Amino acid sequence: MKRITAIVRTEKLEPLKEALFAADVSGMTISQVMGCGNQHGWSEYYRGTEVLLNMVPKVKFELVVEDGAVQRLVDLICEAAATGEAGDGKVFVSPVEEVIRIRTRETGEQAI
Image 1 (cartoon, rainbow, N blue to C red):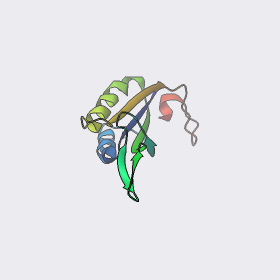
Image 2 (cartoon, rainbow, N blue to C red):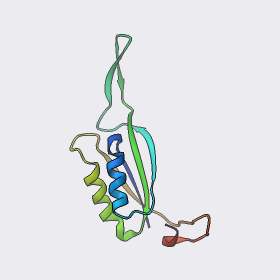
Image 3 (cartoon, helix red, strand yellow):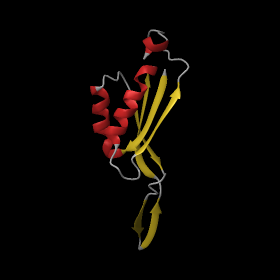
């Protein structure tokens, strides 16, 4: 099993969520996060002084999936989240040792 974590632009929340549900993803966790990277934020003026805001709002998707679904879902995420501009985000894939469904105590892929 693998965890796919995708950090994307806030305007990609609904398109990506719909694409993942259309791909039969059984569940996901979505969080609003702040971060900085190549996009480097933007400037605003506060009381006549320019202020650099380098923490950019993003959306984080987390999914735990079977190993065989990883590449298909990474491709789907990259396609649905891309704008071609700096700040489109990142996808991280990491191993998951165990999953336990609390209600039934099922483990492994049955718990996903």
